[in-house]
Length: 93
Image 1 (cartoon, one colour):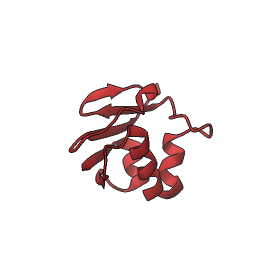
Image 2 (cartoon, rainbow, N blue to C red):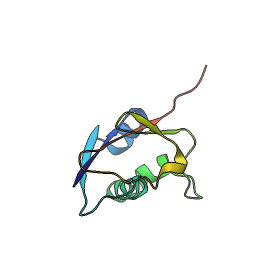
Image 3 (cartoon, rainbow, N blue to C red):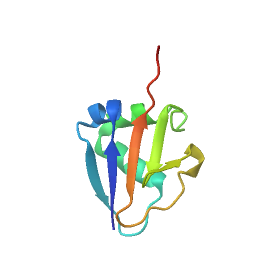
Image 4 (spheres, one colour):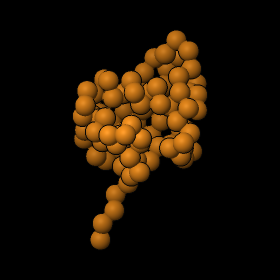
């Protein structure tokens, strides 16, 4: 099965790509997909997504097929052709 991650704003800059595909033998969780992406991009992506405690940073927004996913839903399973969108919220004034 194949799933896609689409990166936006600073996460796109960190990975050097706007999207990429991952293949799994069985349905992974969102957490497993994020871990795979961090492994692919070494520490560059991990420091943008996760706090040192391992929790997803509060400013990271995750969408599964256009539906918002809260950080406590990372154990949700993904299925063939699912798409994950990753954003870092931008604030300022």
